[in-house]
Image 1 (cartoon, rainbow, N blue to C red):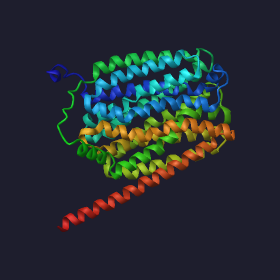
Image 2: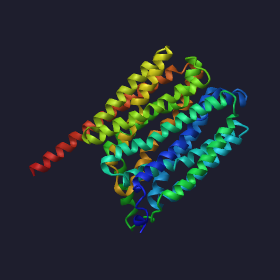
Image 3: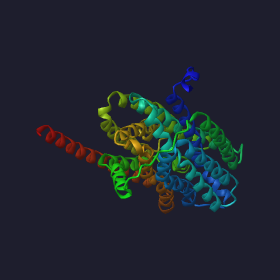
Image 4: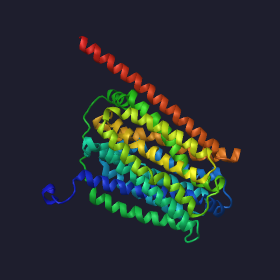
Length: 417
């Protein structure tokens, strides 16, 4: 009946892409809106150190990471809508607490709550695309959804550096605007995302079931993806949380230029993600090679970017990293991982995947702040991130090479029998 009434509507999978993209925009506005104005926030709280300012992001991501595996299990058990809406509501409460905070400790509490709320989103988003998007459009659809992170990041950085950096609004106003956008998204989720029947759990031996589930989540290629995703996100969240400050304090960008230059990472990521995802969908057997190539190129470009003191070359490097980096490679990794995910535990699989990746987001803001406090520069933090990308990519390559060899040996043995 629903199909007949809604014949003029776009297919459900297209509606999902629109809704999920909008959700990422709101999440990433929140994630980036404070980073260009760390000096202003530091003054507001009586001269907070770089390490303390980094903790604002680290506490948010701590909550986010802690929710990844539990939310994936809950989504697989109770359905996406029943977990997503309360999660986004908690996100809104956290944003409001940050906005009304009079001490850094209260900011940290609000950040943790916001992170816990946002932690319900990832498993919902990519289990929906995995289940409903046609196979030949999965990488492209994931790239479109991910473009919401780029748009949200750009909006957060530019609006913050202009509205607050130029003295138009107090920094707290941005949190209240974000909370309003969260409320809008709650209504969008309620209207567009379909409710699902709870999964009926059959009586099976708990020990056998748990052992089987754990093995399913830690196949060799999946472990390789977890390691690579951690490496990719370590660099990405270094850029996300500290690039604006790096441009201001070490490369002498000022005012709105800080937000515009930082946002170029995210805006150039959109065409990069769409371009490489289309290629990956056309030659799916080459996804592993495309992933490795993008990781190596992104790390090389980033090295050039942070070692130059020429502002023009630096901006070109920022744009090139955006085109080749995390937002370009992530949709391909996600769609590649989907072929190994157990059908009954898709959200849990992506929850585990994102848990390992997002551990980087908890570590990198504070570690970078400590490196900056100890050495007087953030350049060494970027060197560390580049090294992590190369190591993670090498491990990904070696594990996949070993897995392919074992698969071929099994095929040959099977044919000989």
